[in-house]
Length: 123
Image (cartoon, rainbow, N blue to C red):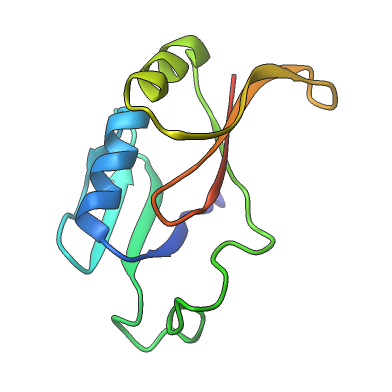
C-alpha cells in the first residue's frame, strides 16, 4: 500500500490545527507547537502541520516565499453540506461557494486556510 501524508509549513501549528479540526472534524494525533498530525475518525493521518524553519527541511525554511505555489489541498468529504455549514459558521475565507465542478461532476467549494493555502472541499 502507498499513501500520501502531506506536510505543510505553517506559522502557528496549534492555531492551524484547531482550524482544520473545527472545519473537517479531524483529531490531533500528535499535538504541540512545532508539529501536528491530524487524523480522521478512523485514525488515518490526513494532514501534518510543521512550523516554519523549525528543523532543517530545505522547503520549510523561508516563509517569505509564497506558500502553496503549485499546491492544492484537495479534501473529499462524505457530507459536503455539513462541512459547508460548519465553514460558514466559522466565517472562513471563501474563494468559491458550493458549485458543480464540470470536470469531476462533483459539488465542491474552495477556501483559504490561515496560512493562505488553497483548499478544495469536494463531495
